[in-house]
Image: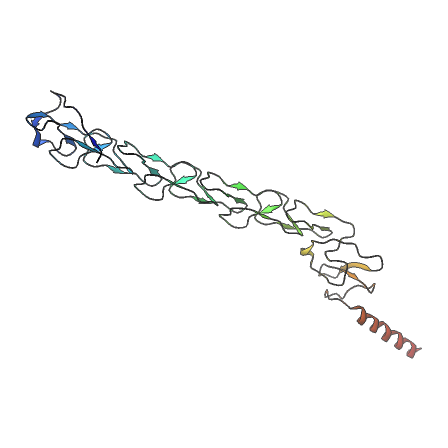
Length: 267
């Protein structure tokens, strides 16, 4: 036990028999009459008739003299040494989740505490992230990236066909019609005069998947299909049906042959 012992100051205080010293005071003279002395700040004495005071333990403090108890450090504060006269606020990036702490805890990655004396940490909002522990701020997702959930420890690259034109996004934007982007983490979409969101074949894709932009080969055509916003390179040099489906070369050839036969019969 850490004890604090003071020399008796003759003539100071009230002269009493040693056994008359109340809690919060002490008397160093085990025989005769001396003055009872108050326990100094940072110390306490819960019992009577004592010749020393006891230091407040870690996690507790006492700012006043002549006290019989120590006070408990509140949330967001700590005392890491004995005989403290005050508790210390947890630093930014740290927090004190309970009372009577001898040290604070660091905020987890994905969270932060901006000020001193925090009892909790705050989750990084969407569009921001924090990969390290014990931080007072969150970082902003850069251009071409996004974070769509709280407490993120990293941002995600915008996927092909999408772009992130500004920092701090919670989602990326789709490339508009007539533009494309084949690379992840892009800030902008590329301009093309002849832009198809499909490989030059007969498979139509929706415009929100514009991650591939290729001109149709010289011997085929491409065009917009109705209101479905499909682009389509048709090997038969005809447009796709209005529902966005495709017509195979074999089927198209059969239809052309049937039309030609009917024309001969009619003539």
